[in-house]
Image (cartoon, rainbow, N blue to C red; front, side, top):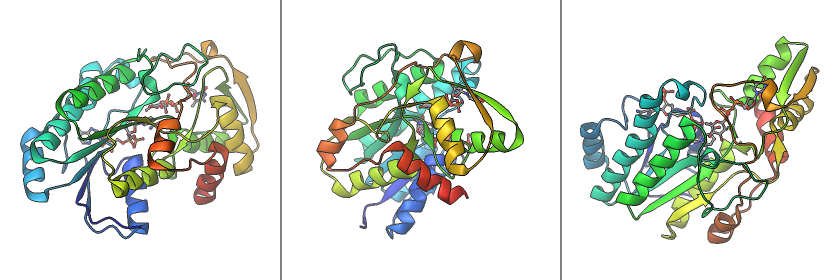
Length: 287
Ligand SMILES: NC(=O)C1=CN([C@@H]2O[C@H](COP(=O)(O)OP(=O)(O)OC[C@H]3O[C@@H](n4cnc5c(N)ncnc54)[C@H](OP(=O)(O)O)[C@@H]3O)[C@@H](O)[C@H]2O)C=CC1
Ligand SMILES: Cc1cn([C@H]2C[C@H](O)[C@@H](COP(=O)(O)OP(=O)(O)O[C@H]3O[C@@H](C)C(=O)[C@@H](O)[C@H]3O)O2)c(=O)[nH]c1=O
């Protein structure tokens, strides 16, 4: 596959940004530009105007975000600026310059208090600062732009940047024993799979704008995810399942945030890998 579209990627050296870069190279994209926090600061409207004027993007991918979930509880204003105002700035620029925005959001927009598959129209009631500001970002985009795809995803990991898989492998090789929460349930997502889907959507260019859910298939807990990471990595460590109450964190996290992917699969005709199969692929890269 290939794309002749001009694409700007904000947050281009974060985890997902690097995954998109990898897939775009494999697909021979030559009109895609990856911007870091300085070259593509989404809080600098003058900079955005210059970028949109000179680069004339047809698609903009927003991977830029404040993602430190616990730290966000102490840095509310900064988190809000990046996740809400930054998203709004990009949406306004897209509206003004006629670009389509692909924005990445999170399962943490949901309260996650009911064990039921979450679909795109379910009520959003975030329970931490990060989730609240991500929801505000979504709402700002919907207000000012028609040509948007908001992709909510969950539990991203990959061979790039820092994430749960890399943290577990590091801790597992340093310690004899680890305790991981078993009563928070969701679905991990290999960021490489999400990156491929984002580029599929651009290539399809169907105009089916709106909000979509994307994670890998299946359901697991953080404990079972950690267990799979150690098994596949062949790391021996004593792993204890614990309740969330035994692992206090600054931010509260949803207990159940498994998303229904029917809409994205039927709209774009994509197949989604099972979470453990993708984990095997990622760990093969890490090894
Ligand atoms: N990671 C996860 O588990 C999940 C992530 N998501 C969403 O997916 C998206 C991608 O996440 P991921 O790649 O993992 O996150 P990362 O934290 O790896 O990447 C985010 C990037 O945004 C950059 N950034 C921060 N502030 C600005 C700014 N003002 N202007 C431009 N860039 C900025 C960061 O730079 P720097 O590091 O220098 O601050 C970082 O490179 C985000 O929208 C996130 O909310 C959704 C669900 C799960
Ligand atoms: C390191 C560690 C974590 N945990 C728990 C804490 C937490 O509930 C869970 C995951 O911890 P993390 O801090 O890695 O992940 P967290 O930052 O909660 O991940 C979230 O990030 C944001 C950006 C999202 O959008 C979400 O979809 C989700 O991926 O594992 C343990 O139980 N034991 C441990 O040793």
